[in-house]
Amino acid sequence: MTVPPIDSYAFLSDTHTTALVGPDGAVEWFCVPHAEGDAVCARLLDRRVGGSFALSVAGCPEPVRRYLPDTLVVESRYPAATGTAVGQDFLAIRPGAPDRPIHAEKLLVRRVTAERGTVRLAIRLRPRPGYGAAAAEWAAADGRWQARGVPLDVRATLPLAADGGSLCGEIELPEGATATVLIGYGERSGPAAPQELLDRTCRTWRDWSARSDYAGFGADVVRHSALVLRGLSFDETGALLAAPTTSLPEEIGGVRNWDYRFTWHRDAALLLLALFRLGHAEEGRRYLRFLLDVCSGPGDTLAPLVGIRGVTTDEQALPHLSGYAGSTPVRIGNGAVGQVQFDTYGHVLDAALAYQQLTGELTAEQWRLLRRHVDVMAQRWREPDHGIWEIRGPRRHYVNSKVMTWVCLDRGIRLADLAGDHDAPVRRWRAERDALHAEVCDRGYDRELGSFVMAYGSREVDAGLLRIPVVGFLPGDDPRVAGTVDRIRERLTIGPVLLRRYAVGDGLPGEEGAFLLCCFELVSALVLAGRRDDARGVFDQLCGYAGPLGLYAEQLAADGTALGNYPQAFTHLALIEAALNLDGAADRDALHSWAERHPIRPEPRRGP
Image 1 (tube, rainbow, N blue to C red):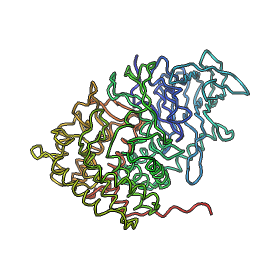
Image 2: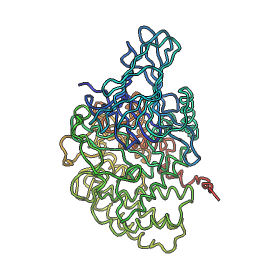
Image 3: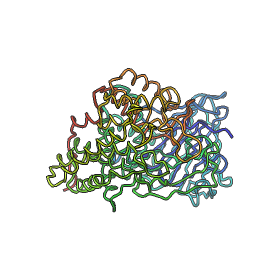
Image 4: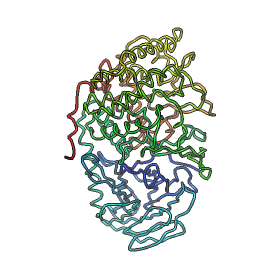
């Protein structure tokens, strides 16, 4: 059965949940009561049993679509033989409180207007709870339809009828007439007219986007990526979804299918810096608070990922789903939560340092929590771990993990100074940091290869090494860094500007595609090496790989086919970082340098 390309889907968000709309106008992914919840529309993962919300205009199998400028509202144009219709699909939002500027209306809105002539509109709403395991039962009451066993209620301006587990309706729209369907999935605000919902949603997104004054290199794609990231940020906590989907395959027909509806700490510093740099300081503060809450948990080991509500779930397979394009198993939950990834500590401390440089708002209690984790790494850095790529095998001495552990110690030392903490064991931390640096340069660098390597004793490289200059471990123009960049491009390239993250076996059958995070990080590494023209060429080519709505998945096949979960937060984060580095073209990472030079006005105190 033919399935739409992964990157042909439109992404909708109200910052509480998300939806994906296929190129034929059908909602094929919709989770309730929040983004980590049950996908009552899951046709994305099984076109037979997965739920969906089909909407079609007779004579037009696929509309022409775009996002309305600076919004996550999708406009669709339906040219048909009898006329032309225009529609808008969105998850409704309105302005919120100062510390939570976007408020979810908890309404999926679909409306179609006959712009010219007469058009015939048909809808079929077929939610299936339990990720497609069961059918809904509909009952009409008080001018709306409610689904038993599914937290949905439906209002529409066209007549609807229950047909088994579906709600169906058809209507002929004369020129100027509009049909609207409102699907509520939780407690909402008071009633509002559909046009008011559209206007308010557009205005709220545009007001948020307008807070950024960035007008530098790649401003348009940076602004769009920032909007995507805001759509992936959970309203209750500020946590960032790595992606709104699960089990979109890293290889079509393969088993590399994972649930990415969690927040990974490897995105921490980059997200916080990007939010502050683009004028979204409040979102940066909320994310940092979430991160520190996670750090305050029991025990000394930080899990590499956590649920967006602060809760993680065990990994399990859903055998009743056939998977995207036959790619099984379909998984929910993520087993990587039990891994030991020492790079996590570096990302957290890097984010905390940037936050303190920008705001000076870290409290003594927050620093005490962070100091505990710096102390843990000062003691444990000589141990192996599972590494950033979550290879499900034995622990190794991964070089990226060692570099990020060095970042943890380095940032801890600098934070102790900023916090005025004279009792912190800075002398010991400094000694451990320097010993770690020396060991990585000795055991993690292969002189014959002229490159850093994936792990001690290995002759293989991995694309995580591209962050060595970005985090300041070594300068970008250091010959060892330059040689590493060259070896990565030589050994991991699978297509023009497309890099795999590694080439070694990872215990799973098949192989994955190019990892777009790493492709954009190549841009940053080239900038820091002084090779700006080369970096610009790579960036421009990568921008050409975006989907038709400017969205990126996790990976690409050599032929440009999108792979993996979508849209992927860290791909859009790395795009922003690369663009800002190209704009700065400085001798070190533009985001970190900016944070040191641009303190933000402290957050106003609230309450008495």
